[in-house]
Image (cartoon, rainbow, N blue to C red):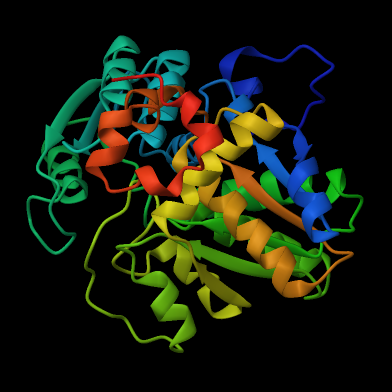
Length: 348
């Protein structure tokens, strides 16, 4: 199962290095709100993102129930980071790895997946109810391939269980049980559901758990409307978060959420630059969205609270976009970046 060892000790390979990431105090935002705001440094996982936990969790579950045999094949539909985590785990465990992903994802992710030995199959970015959706193609390929397992990250609750067993307990221990709220964006729903369930149980319901949602996702409206699912429209610069449906992972916890926050792309891109400038943190847009949500939640709950969120991954996998003046202008986001931070748009 996922390693519970201390980081001051040696660990057993890639698998043993997953988890036990630091909780980073965000000084500038904390001082502005009078609360303590922390980001869980999931970019320090060995595969570079929070998805290492889910990847290991779903593989271990497939091994435990006998579906995955030595020399077998792992198949997944992913926007990138789960695929990268799976590619690492497959190398460590000796499995073949086949990844289906939308063709809109960053080239950095695709290149890294291939470098790790995964077979990448980029397919059209179409809605979930379209048979060509990357998740359905991954499922169909696994069903037609002997010895293959579709890990099904969106609806396989081994994903949320991994966070219930590891990420939640880590946050509780790192805050000495003083955490008042946890907020995070969601794609599969695994992090939100797993961490949320643990913190609610451990605190007897005291800890508030909120959803952060980008443009183009239906989940903010779903939560704030009391469970009415709208038709999905629009899009976001964030990758891997936002949804058009309630996944099985999210479904294990969605009725226990305390609220939801809609975070615009303008706020997310501004926070990417602000955190680099004020905290020295080089993070992606999804991580920045989470920090914006933590900041807004701290303002909503009032001073003296301890707010936690997740720094999903670094900006390295997105730098050709996030720090490109041309790309930012093409998204209509140039005005969202304060003048004193535009010095970081160093790419043409």
